[in-house]
Length: 65
Image 1 (cartoon, one colour):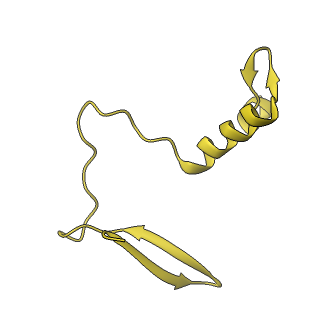
Image 2 (tube, rainbow, N blue to C red):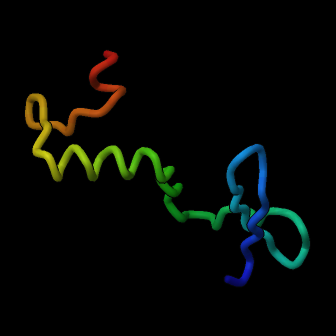
């Protein structure tokens, strides 16, 4: 896949984005910040399993609060 570098690191694999200039691209102005994958998966699992508390999805942050 273009723009991705896959390397073996410490018993696993690491996937990183690359661009022609060799440095990460700056976020576009006005574009909402992307949700980290772990947070998105956490929300999806909660919604799929129907785990809610007071009408809100229950996540690790909600359980810790």
